[in-house]
Image (cartoon, rainbow, N blue to C red; front, side):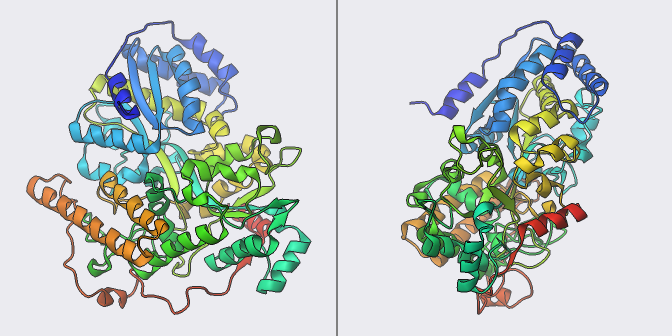
Length: 579
């Protein structure tokens, strides 16, 4: 039986030509009927669309294939923006949607075979370390100034993209163009937290105020409070925590997506720790060669902070989450909050904002009768090993990626489509649909000021200076597809009880080093990674590294300091004053 990816690859090899009418009249129709609001005036939108019409003339009638994962933003692109682009430019786009794992697999297959499966991909900027080393992806900085100059939108305004730093390689070149962004933040039921009876009960038990947890100690106390002490609200059994644990690739991303750095495992540095990142991989400042993941090599993947992070994930899932959560995957756990029986979630993606503001008629029990959210999002609480200056969470930046294996004419047509769906003519409306903002100008537009009260803190967060503390996987990871697949099996063994957190992380760190050793050999023999492949440190007694300043960090005597919370309204006020 063919897999969905195999079928997709077969379909992607087919090309059909269709020629239809395209031009200013169609552009004007879409501007008036669909692409409002916009940060541009209607005349400016028309100027931008006229550029697209002219630039697309050599490719009119071409049919191209692009691939992305399935989230509301990409569904809007696939269903609506492809139609608009074809009517305006005459280029037909098959924008296919698959699961994140299948997108990574397709990207990896095209890189390995150098066969053109798709003409462009929206794949996570987590692969920036891979793309900048393998040099199989197109260097967009050089492309826009050189071979692709004739199809590069003069109104693109790259500096307006909030995630530009995420898609820039160690060489300072742009390898991907952000298409959508979402962060993992803290989510909580503000209506429950505001109840005076629950506030009094919490303070009596724990000795401090019920509020947004600043540290993991407070998060744990709040989880216990709702699951063990409150137990029921309005006749419904409630829980103090939500997460997922299904043994699947999603579980690996759950951890590589900055969970270890939230606990404090990595080094200080933004957008990623230097020299140790959130994966626990060490790469010295000013170099491009990773030197190891194990503590014995100077890494932190099996250091006390990482082990603590995994232990707390497993412990909270078992003790405070709803029954069955351990068998949920990414796509099942986050929307489950809409049932209305969970008080908080420490690792919640803003990509689900759109579903969480759906009406009660759509089965959402976390909005009031007027559609106002009963919940809010807030900064992630920090673990006991966390230090000021570290990143505080993950931010997904699904980004347009072109490959050198794609014929230049098809690459140019795909680049036009990529720029179209992120253009200022289109991007504000797309942001209102998918709620995954990429442009600073969009999130600061007056239309989002008006909509902010309905979005539970999304607008306030993205306008705040704090937003820079959330970032994707960075350049320390030399080959994302090869290393990411190791994680979920090891973490799954913790959830199943087959291994302790320490045993699982020891095994994980060792396997990462083994894979990086093979990369080192390939780089030294054939320059596979452009001279920027791993150059592993020789192992030594872990205590030597743990006794040095910085990451990897020695085990704390007290991993549960006093809980600390902050009032949400005061937090938002601070954001407004500084953002």
